[in-house]
Length: 235
Ligand code: C5P
Image (cartoon, rainbow, N blue to C red; front, side):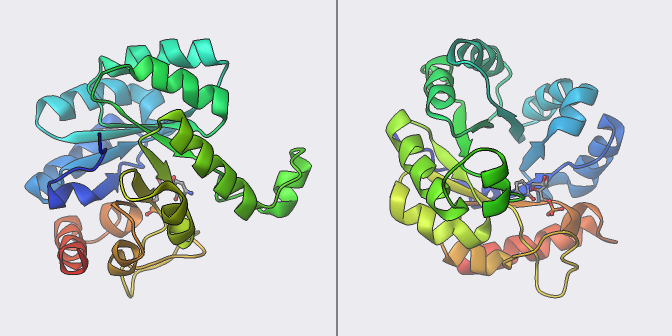
């Protein structure tokens, strides 16, 4: 079964990187039908974001819960089983084989799609050595992408710069979700290797996670519409 989503609008995922659910809801209201898919990370998840997920889903939106789970397999299985009841579309787990197998067992035959994080993009080869690994980032990304595929994971979160390598490994059916997207002319902020929405689609990304270029724009709805146009033109 493919994890791909058919509605073109679902390719753009707006990161609700704000401190409170009221801030988040203001953005959602402002974007209206200009956005269909939202990402909720730690900050909001630990501040009412799970209830907000339920609310958004009841209003017909899709939710990507970015919790990057990692624990012993059994604990991951039980946690993921609980999350299947929320009705979110995507959930992240770290790409450790035991963790991924546990998550796949917990997801069972629900509609939840699991995304694996291969190597955190803030890590370079030196950080991996410090953490006790003997592999370079590139090799770890390749290894874990293969393991994610074998484990039955639905997709990979990776930087736009890694998209082509990952696509070669996982094939066409699994989804690739990429952050680090900047429309031409917008501020990079702390993102280092960015691609424009059009470039990201052309190198094989299925979904683009976009935060500040939309949520901090003077006109968020206009910014989202311009990004959607660029995604549509490149699709
Ligand atoms: O504001 P911006 O568009 O940079 O937001 C990108 C989102 O994607 C943020 O929620 C950030 O935490 C997330 N992310 C990222 N880089 C990764 C993984 C996740 O920027 N490697």
